[in-house]
Image (cartoon, rainbow, N blue to C red; front, side):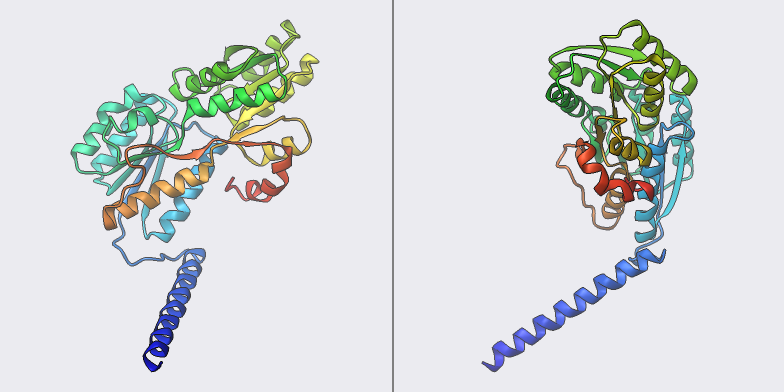
Amino acid sequence: MGAVLAVMLAAAGCSSTGGKRAEERAAEAAEGRAAVNTPRWTFAMVTHSGDGDTFWDIVQKGAEQAAVKDNINFLYSHNDEANQQAQLVQTAIDKKVDGLIVSLAKPDAMKAVVAKAVKAGIPVVTVNSGSAESKEFGALTHIGQDETIAGEAVGDELNSRDRKKVLCVLHEQGNVGHEQRCAGAKKTFDGAMQNLYVDGTNMPDVTASIEAKLQSDKSIDAVVTLGAPFADAAVQAKQTAGSKAEIDTFDLNAKVATGLQSDKLGFAVDQQPYLQGYQAVDLLWLYRYNRNVLGGGQPVLTGPQVITKDDADALADYTKRGTR
C-alpha cells in the first residue's frame, strides 16, 4: 500500500509540475518572451503578397507570434512580381538563414531559387500556394489548403444555394492557385460558370470590370471573388449595376465577417491564414530542434472551411484582432 501511495504522490507531483510549467510557458509567450531555450535561429518568410493585402497580414501575424514563442528572429518580405519574389528568396539565402518559408503562386519562377536554398542546407516549408510543386522542389512540407478541393467546396455550396450562373473573378493572372480554385468550382457546380480576369492592383478597375459584366448579363446570380478585399469591390459593383447576384468570396477578414452578418455576402471560404504562418514557423523550429516533419509527404491542410452568416458571429471578434 505504501509503495502504491508513493507512486501516486510522485505521479501527482509530476503532473503538477508539468501543468505549472505549461502555464509558465504560455504566460511567457503572451508577454513577448520565448517559451523555449533553443538557439535564436533566423527564419525568413518570402511571399507573393502585394501591398495592403489583409490576408497576408494575418499570415504574418501568425508567423510573428510563433516566432516569439520559439525564440526565432523572424524576417518577412514580399513582392507580387514573381522575379522579385525570387530575388528576395536569394537575399535570404545570402543571409544564410536557418529556415525559409515561401509561397509558390508562380512556381516556375521560384523553382531554381528554392533548389538553391535546399542545396545550401536551408530547410524549406511552403505555404498557401504550390502544394503540387512543394515536394518536387525539395520542401519539407506544404501548409495551406488544396485549392482544387477548396474550389470544389465552393461549387457544392453554390449548388446548395440554387445558383445557376456564376462569375469567378481572378485578380492575379498567372497564379496557379487561383486557376485551380475556379476550375474546382466549375467541376462541381451544376450551372454555368465563367472566369473574369481583372487587375487586382487597381481596385477601381476591379469594381468597374465586375460592374460591366453584371450590367451586360442580368442572368448572373452569383459572383465569387478569390480574396477578401475584392468581395467589397464586388458588393459595390453589384449595387451600381442594379444586380441581384449573391456575392461570395474566398478568405475571411473583419470586413467579410461584417458582410456575412449583414447579408451583403453569402458565404466565405476560410483557409485560416494565421494558422499557415504560425504552423510554418513552428514546423521549422521543430525540424531544427528535433528533426520533426509533419504531413508524411502530403500537404498539411488548413482549409477549406465554408463560413456563413451562422458562423460569422462566433468569428467576428477574432477577425477584428486580425487572427482570422
